[in-house]
Amino acid sequence: MTIALHGKKVSRGIAIGRLHIIERNQPDIPEYIIEKSEVENEVQRFKQAVASAREQLSRIRNRVPSSAAADIASFIDTHLLMMDDVALTAEPIRLIRENYCNAEWALKIQRNALVDVFMQMNDPYLSTRRDDVDHVVNRIQRVLLKHTPLPHEDLDTRLSGTIILAEDLTPADTALMQQQGVTAFATEYGGPTSHTAILARSLGIPAIVGIHHATRYAREDDMAVLDGTSGVLLIAPDERTLEHYRHRQAEEERYYSSLSEIRESPCRTRDNITIELQANIELPSDFDTVREVGANGVGLYRTEFLYMNRETPPDEEEHYATYSKVMEILDGLPLTIRTLDLGADKQVDGGVQTGPVHTNPALGLRAVRLCLKEPALFRPQLRAILRASANGPVRLMVPMLSSLTETDQVLSIIKELKKDLREQGMAFDENLPVGGMIEVPAAAVCAEFFASRLDFLSIGTNDLIQYTMAIDRVNDEVSYLYDPLHPAVIRLIHCTLLAGRKHNIPVAMCGEMAGDPAYTRLLLGLGLREFSVHPAGLLEVKKIIMDSAINELTTMADEVMRLNSGRQIEDYLKTLN
Ligand code: PEP
Ligand code: MG
Image 1 (tube, rainbow, N blue to C red):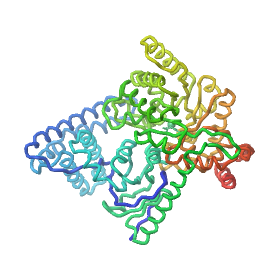
Image 2: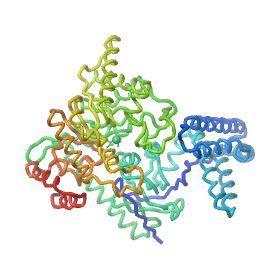
Image 3: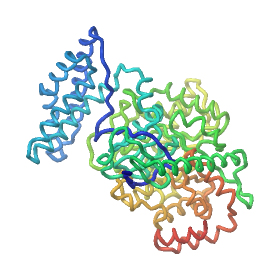
Image 4: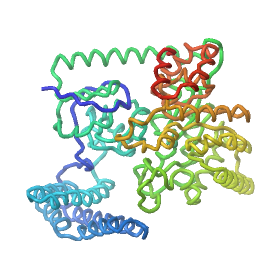
């Protein structure tokens, strides 16, 4: 029987393949046999992993502020105690020695045995203890997996062609999946502008989020169809359904490849107004796509990827080498490098401490706030961007500005670094444009002041909407409130565009709203002339721009400003589109 599950569509396209289920909160565990002579090394590897997991947890424990609720600390203490328990530390060693299996697999077997015991206890309190076992086991597994001796080709072939079904995925998991040939993914949690969803769009992987309890209805290796265009996951489809989707898949592919005809055309409206249409990039695999889709440059280079899936942060030379490589590929097209935006939904392992455990990370120490607090993190990146600016058109963009004080602090660090570079005889562009992202409502309302200090602005609607509507962008339970057409959002965008015009500086938009063809005409009518969008959606937006005439859209902005709800604006746009 076919089961149809509905969620939020976050990345279009149709994938057909076998399901690979990543169990609840559990990393994907490889299984392999080791040589007899390797057994003691494997035991050592396991012991070291337990020791580093314990150390990580102690560090977290030390960072819990004294003001935090007492149960947070005791929760971590319980986990620390469990790491000393023989059930978790000695038993996997016995399994490695007896079965010649890898440490990850031995730990997984022992975890399953412990969870079975807890589940058999008819006591609701004890059965929730399985969560504690999972927390502790997963922490050790993640350390082990980072140092897995399994050759990467094995991982690649295992996941190649599969559709991943998981409770949730981190951006780092998503980035790895593409390298492993995963064709699509669905998760039980997550919002449409979570970083994981953005990555899926930019990788061109069909994806759906927020399918609650999906893992209960599926089994490993089930045949499935994931329709990211309408947000449906079909498990065990019959032959007729499969045929229907194969047909739709081919049609969609034909439509998107037909768009490549306008790749080389200038991005101009019917009434001859040139629109800047740039690409958002992040992963190395995005670098080539900028040229492939005919973008005019890069309006947002998210540099967080440099920190993912590794243990230490990159130094100045690595930043510089990466930017130089991107510039070489862009071959003269402008590159807007956004400085680090770590924290909140962009958690990475790269050796960066984003502070103590907080209950509202999106409102905490993230992006420029973190960078200003940690100069050792910020300055190497700024120096590298300055040095890269000697080799071609680079712009530097600062995320999450909320006050002029922060802006001035950043400008003064840049000034200081320029002085150092001059003294060291290192080349850089004296006029490197420095811009800021308008993502916090306070900055949008006061955009005029930011426009007076900076060389350009770029509206980050993903965060701007999150903060305006007071919804966590990764929380699917409140994602129904995520509304780019809410009158408050439209007003903030309008206000920012007016500020740019008043101070004669460019204002771009690089949030996901810019890449959604449903909003292209509205944004043109409001006065937006620079779009930066994920490469996979660029040509669709370009087609709408080329089919639009601005002189037919100008009265529209006034009309939209009069409407008092997102629904009214949406209905009005339907007539316009
Ligand atoms: C945004 O917030 O709109 C944006 C482009 O930045 P990010 O999605 O990386 O937070
Ligand atoms: Mg943002």
